[in-house]
Image (tube, rainbow, N blue to C red; front, side, top):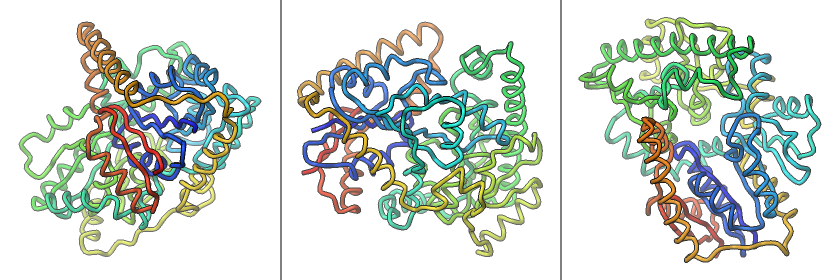
Length: 458
């Protein structure tokens, strides 16, 4: 009878794997709520008893804002913390340790909580510098399972539509939130926060180096796209910015160039599965493309090589010259490129998905362990009527929140939210049904509002 809370911040990145996990976790007398992470936060005030699954739990870095966590614990919830951005870090192990300390603090979690980490390296580090009572287990990340042959039919309709419209397109994914931040530009990157103090030398060196590196990388990628466009006017190039970037920046650069399209729309998986090859510099989608058997170019002719993102850049080939990249693209279209999944010791320690194609089952086992610890005499669910009323309350809350931002001159905050979280409609119901059929699990899905749906086993 327990409640599972599956929050979503970025629809394009999280929705499909949360659908997969909600179907896998479906049982009699169990409700899996999937929704806007802000709405899930509201639900936590009225639900009792269950499991919280995800990272959208601490409002500030280093798990420093514990109010939400404390409320969940008081309301009989167990935590399975899963970071959406683990292991894909710039620099070497010194920088990785710095970033781990800046983003997480597992010692905050209690002994009946869990952390699902991407690989053995994170587990060892998390357990090394403070006493940890929570259980840390290597599970990999289930969103990468979706690129296995087993799940390709789940994306078939969307992928077919893209290839029909754009042909054998080249996909360019960017991840330059420091150089091209969509929320408030450099004001956002260099403002004082818990994770950035300009009086701290290490903080300052890291932040400026990463910003400088990305400034060079943006220019590299933009120039390469232009060169490809000129050499292959018959090929369509899709530039898909990271959700934290300013999409209009690229649209302004490529205005009136007919075969370059700047698009941030829908889940990333169909775009990857439909492309002829992927070009990037330090983007997680390089890993996804490799697992999907797509050729990958990591392109960078400038910048600080010591600040490259190891796990992403180990996928495919790394090129630093425009001619090299154009020649490689010719080989791809001539079907002369073979995709190889990385298999070295460091990569495997960072990213368990390179060793397992079924990390969803490991996450499921961890969720079941957490559920077994929930006190069964302290569980409270909600009726559909109350869920509808909460949905109305949430809409009013969002209106007031972003009206305040608008009048404060922070309209980009609203645009950032709208870009990250795309509301649910009947399409999400069809997606759940498609996943349920694929996994041969009979479930019921109820669309409560554009911010929430829930899944139950029939």
